[in-house]
Image (cartoon, rainbow, N blue to C red; front, side, top):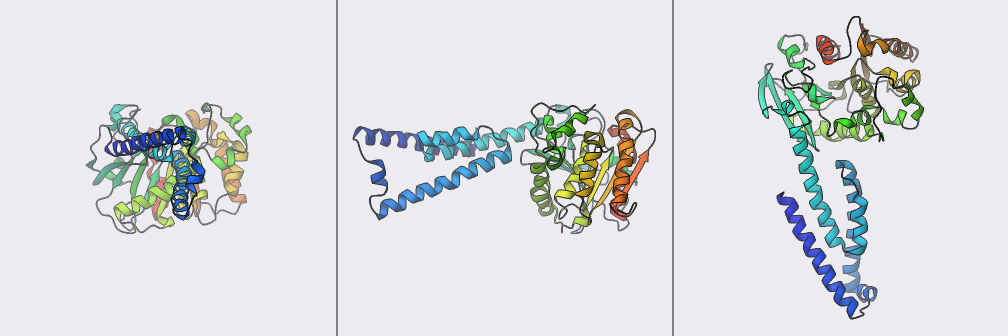
Length: 386
């Protein structure tokens, strides 16, 4: 039993017992509830104190349950009308603690236990690999040997196969980031290698919900007819805005605090592949004050075809930079014609190729981590050094 949860359960039990005990006595004696509440000034103080507490507690329960993924919060609120806020609110706090603990455990164990057999900290590629749990998500962080207030920060989607060794990932592939660092392929002219962060999902079935551009696709459900090889989850509930807000407004400040960083959009970027390639462009559009660069590999343009491209390009702030690339094999074979359409749209919108946006084609490569690992230094070096 979680100690905090136990504490709240005890308060909740006392609130329930006392409420029902005294309610029962009052009902049997025919006492006037509302008259007793507002009989004199002292009664008014206590009544308003209770009511205002309840009015604050209910919105908190709704907002907090949405933030951490608790379901059926309406049942707690309804219970308050037939019992007491002194029972319901502590009970909600207890269940919240259990939910957070369960999310933490789920992240630590994962769908494939071999993914997570990693020490909290170990030496890797001249730096260290660290991990922690943030709002129910596992976060992997590669930290270079030397860090400074102006050390760049790179945040990656699909963290479960990003920084770990190929023997530890779910599909025995990774992005080759530590390998590229160790081989000297990732280079910063000023010598300041970035802190590189892999963000996990709490639930892998939510990948499309978190990565697909919400404000573009949600009001245009017809776009999902273009999915093709990408499978649409059942009952798709968009979560990209909440996810991007988590990264920009809570995770990045937490990373800055942990590693003593002085944040600057010019030094803060997102990187992702496929749906993650769309997510990075959407991320810099939603929070250009945090993320100044989007690095997308094998960007999944077929999700929304030209309509998606046009909306993404028109929504891009002019003070950000964008990298995108594509192969010609596997799933990428259906991507690269749309890749050229994106290039054309960027050119028409006045973006300067190779300066504030870069688009690359890698013939003979496909749609998986091993291909991305072979070229991952190119977008990162362009971000760091241009």
